[in-house]
Image (cartoon, rainbow, N blue to C red; front, side, top):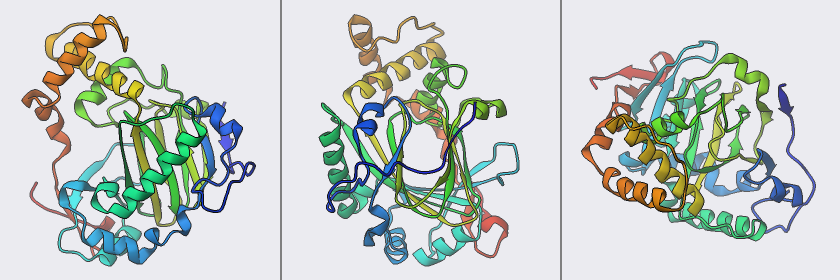
Amino acid sequence: MLDKVHDAPVAGTVGKDKIFTTWDDTTTALWGRQPVCIGHRLHESPLFSRAALAALIEKYPREHYNIFSMSAQKENKFYWRQGDFNGHSGEEVLNTIANGRLWLNLRKASVVDRRYGELLDAILAEIAEHIPGFSSQRHEVGILISSPKAHVYYHVDLGGQLLFQIMGRKRIYFYAPDKPFITSEDLERTSISSAGVDIPYRPWFDDYARVYEDFIPGQMVGWPLFAPHRVENYDCLNVSMTMEFTTPTMMRTQIVNLANGSLRAKFGWEPRSRAIKGPAFWTKAALWMTLRKSSWLKKARSGHTKIDFRIDRTAPGGVSDVTP
């Protein structure tokens, strides 16, 4: 049945210098097994003021951001385009997003600006304090800025994810990381295409979702690996910070997904194992090393890189078409 969650837990507060404010024993017990929602202080940081975000946008390298346009929430169809904001000030970009139907993803913020890198280090250290043996081989933070009533389609992420709400309110749906909500073939296909929205969604899935009805500033949510999810903004500008991390076990699972998907799609071979250790795994790891920079994989992912609009605050939805 539909599981609605209205508020984050309030027990287990920690010291004033901590980022997480309500991490308790229950959070630790459920980490990676169920969605967990706890408090944080990032929304109080000057790093996320409107002026700071505008300044960050203005210096952001083109290769590290994506800006998307999508359909209205009420339209039950997939519509997702990628654009550009070159030549606009940070404040113009924010104003256009606030009055359009756009979703800006500032990827690799922890690389672009060392202050967000220091923030990432602090978050990783706090997690390690609570989760015995926690380590991440790859990690980064990004910043999401999205329009009132914007939404993210049903999708899956291939690494561990945390979402920190900074500004605005949204509703988030989480689904079990298992059939019928997602299959091994879905994960393999996503590993190849790098497009997490390449998985089927049925409206009745919502009857079995874990729903955070009012996700607000000062809340952070984490969820199990490969748990599909989707997001609906309320009628307000939204700012969130994402943190992606990859533990050694997650890395091995990603290797298997790409190798199995490649065996199925490229060679017509039906994979029989998802083992992340032993001879079968090491054979797939060797295949992964060969394929990850191959022209075949680059071509499989090229369909998601087309840019066909530029932001325009005077146009409907905040976008004007350009030649791809």
